[in-house]
Image (tube, rainbow, N blue to C red; front, side, top):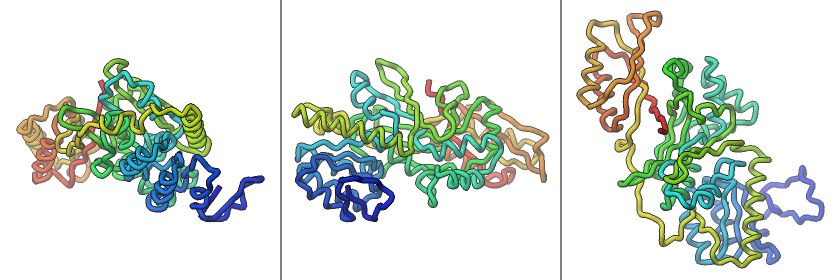
Length: 392
């Protein structure tokens, strides 16, 4: 075992310990290197060095795989070794194995889910009317969020995981740099409560969808019908929805993080690698579920080409005809209104919030409509937008 820092807290017995992590790579008696140090540079150097020496690798490092996975898998393919990474996505939920093996008979068209427990905990607690900042501090005190929570609350952690899921499910190269990420720091208790009144729940989702012209790869707050199973996943738990052409919708639910959940996945990967080595199998499951030559050249679509429904909150001045102007702008851009909510009790300082839920429309058209609405003298400030998905 090796760590860059001394670990007097560990009871290692007769297991050798080093503060030079490359001692593990250079030990000829070690067949499998388990990388749990996190980050990019040192982890990448360690993993590539292990592969170069013919050692198999198990990692829980989703950032490493999402950003450098293409290079790592190419090196592993040439060296004839295994790189296993189940623990990097959704912790104790064996969703990578499900996508690569259990659903191998399916063409997978959608993978979506709650894949960051910190964000899900915060949004769950905000349903009680609590502010984002207050709940974030609580999450940090409980150990659910890091001192620097950026990766969790701004969607970067979820985008790492979604990139890996999309590549494994769709048979495409890893394309993290093209993923759209939007966090939850701008979500308010007001919008959460009004979404509930409309029959929806706000969740921070990663959504990957295969289309004929490319794939959608996006992480953002999303309105989900309260009746859908994924809307009922609360706290730090994770859930991943997979839609296959033969099986239909399946959902995988459980602890997405934590020492024991991660350890469960890491040990399962070690067992898988050991079985492959013991059987001398040359036909083991490829890293992304597809042979390298079978990967499709599908690019990630820009957000402007994505289609979804929208929740809009517009702070309007109490002027005659303001609703007609808003409706006219939406209509000009082919945007149909599903429902509209306006409460006289919320009238304040000459302004009143107007809540609109739209039907599905291309994001490009919504961007143009919002730009026009914000230019109206009847509208105060920015239009709040939250995308909505029904997963039908």
